[in-house]
Length: 345
Image (cartoon, rainbow, N blue to C red):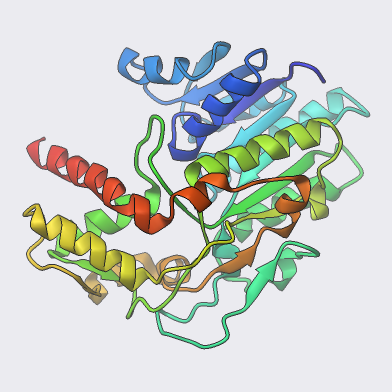
């Protein structure tokens, strides 16, 4: 397949914009269909500058009929939008199933970005010894704690990738804590969550004592991993279905949530955005609203090794050059400007 047509969900987003940029540099002849909500010139121009062959499809993840219909007529779907938006994932699988039925022997490819929330140990922010380090060699989603995040969509994707009737070629990337500055959407979701929570209560905080750590990955390395998986799949070299599960975590030192939220608290306090410096556990009025989802995603250890990506030749060069602590002040600066802009509205 020389120049595939690729439907991208989340092209404007934190990871998706870097993915689009790399595809523009390496594969300018690929045809990209990009779903975009509210495609104003201010939003369109930065995205179109990343790749010369972009077509905009106006819509949102809630537009399931549109997503299904578009997925029915493309070679590849790349979903970097939301790992937990099941209606859009279901619509994608529905369209790709029809796609497969129309092209016997040529199943379409679906690459989905999930997250390491599938391996959360659910320790509610407490320090524990001997945290399990997972590998993606022989990874089986049935071995993950069943109440963990992302699994609702992920298990259905693997099922679609292993069936014999109207199969879909499926690959799932499970990134760790993604950090850095985005091409278009500048801030990562977890930083937006924590900075807004801090603004709401007047101090930076954690779920529980924050003595947990999670594998991390620079956003540019996450995007390069997706491009590598796409290229490898198009060449028939990537695992698929039950063998298409890949962790995206750089082999670099980990930091606790308490460590980085203390840095955020000091910076935002110095800017006059918070009443207190440092970091303290968030009160129940914050954590209770998120329920088990919050504790599992934001109060748990997630340690993993990207063995299979490394075997494909992936090199997390940006994670090695710029650690999360190196980039964090610049990330917080962007988040602070967003908070200030929101105050003025």
